[in-house]
Amino acid sequence: MKVVVLVGGVGGAKLAYGLAQVLPPEDLTVIVNTGDDTWLYGLRICPDLDTITYTLSDLVNKENGWGVAGDTFNTINAMRRYGEDAWFGLGDQDMATHLLRTRWLREGQSLTEITIRLTKKLGIHQQILPMTNAPVATIVDTKEYGEIDFQTYFVRYRWQPTVKSLRLAGIDQASVSPEVETALNEADVLLIGPSNPWLSIDPILNVPGMRELIVKRDIPRVAISPIVGGEAIKGPAAKLMLELGHKAVSAEAVAHYYGDVINGYVYDVVDGDLTVPQQNVTKFETIMKTDEIKVALARNVLEWIEQWN
Image (cartoon, rainbow, N blue to C red; front, top):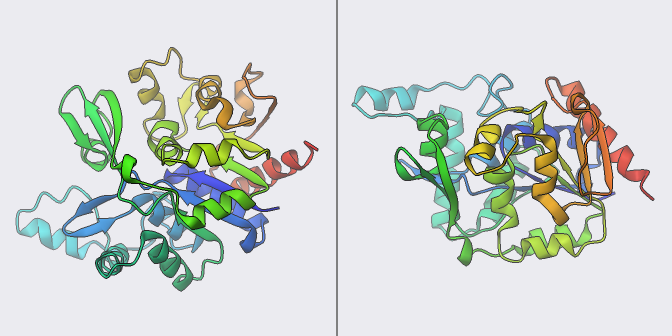
């Protein structure tokens, strides 16, 4: 069973970890949001790609869900001595990833080529792919500050500004890479992780040609809800839903939002029985507090999908 999963953020990384434990490496492809990517101190930072990479290589700081476990911050602290407002915490080991990525980009390698190169060096045998090779940036229009880039909104202001709208700068020039297209065309199952639908998954789906490639596949296409009991498992999803005009924060609303992109939906047991447009619906424990629960959720979802036919 070849599985492709669309992810962004810590929740998506947790599901990818669970899938990596139950599937042969060659059967798992992780397509990752790059709308969060940014330039900082002359370096190309790809937070979601790095979170997935560190998670699948067992380097991740499990307490945070991102960054490298045991990393130091000597460089960023030295910058603060010079008066730099270093609000984006770059660990010393983490910085090595950004330095190499930036150098290779300037040498003309694609983001896909670089990601494959980095993941192989870390012993990752699953395929991790950026959603596109083109630079795309999520721009957040806020009530307090006007338009700001995603990392300023998310990290500097800790996602507290009120969001008026979102746009994807550069998305019109983006395209689906050959590697992503091949993975989608060969997939037996498509999953959407319990990631923020607006900040993590929408950038992937809005790459020109991506949605069409997904919807045309007559295979199980299943999303896992990031909303449990009317609250986001992590991050600003619940707050964002209300600010963008959704009437309720619920797992049910997320299913309606995805519409025909998916034909199956998984939500948490605490939400009881839902009425959603998808034909195939089930509930499991979806809050992945431990590695055991990550693996159990991945196994449960795949076993449930196998029962469809």
